[in-house]
Length: 377
Image (cartoon, rainbow, N blue to C red):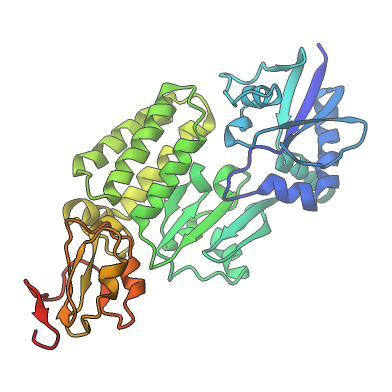
């Protein structure tokens, strides 16, 4: 049977656009690596799968396909589905997939690039993204080097970070002190490292990650489909003050099952992101669930607005601005916010030139119980 080698540029993690980087910076090396792989397996045809809308050209010897970007397309069967214009659905196992009735082998752009490096240098590097709040940079780190040394070489401060995510949504959270234990390898765990700052709420960040996981799941296998939905729902409820500690236990229970039974590598790996996050940020998780409090002051469900009586001038500007009529007050009297009606939109804060309206989490300042004249409280 004829064989075709497909290089898939559509399977990037959003935290590590490795295929995009190699397409722009190392395209010639990737093509050379494809030829090496084709010769190794005896493939007569070469092809690439590019994101829809890409205008990159590869010459007459390489067939170019276009399709949607999805991490699920790392599975050969899902890549073929995308080429057909369908949603990515993995094939298990994906070792006997065909493309146009030809035996298909799929290689990643980085896999092709590594083959060239090994031929020319006898060793290979790992393309690695370093993501901080304000920027994302890419480095090519030598396989076998210590992760902590790579970061030190890039002048990346580690100790003052609140959270460290290794490997994107297929990865795990790690402690800063553990980075010296990690050695760069050619696998997805070392695609990226993402840092979270002290002012970030890690439960809110877990919610965003759980939403990304749920949005990435192709939905074919029940475990990944329902498990990712459970993750998203539970962590959303944590940020809304509706979760219970038993929900944390439920996440850990279903994660063990998903890791074993999910069809593709994405489904098998994604639980560790949630479970390691819940473990490392246990104090914040418990504060959200037990104390109904967001220590970082980020989650609006635990915040409230109040009017500082010493600073309020009774100007009625906030009364006029509130779309819910949640502020009680009249000229010359200290205004009061009715929490039952307040939707926490924050428009009153912008309207108050005196800076008398503040957003608080936890203990509230002493406030009048009834309308009181300015200066009399």
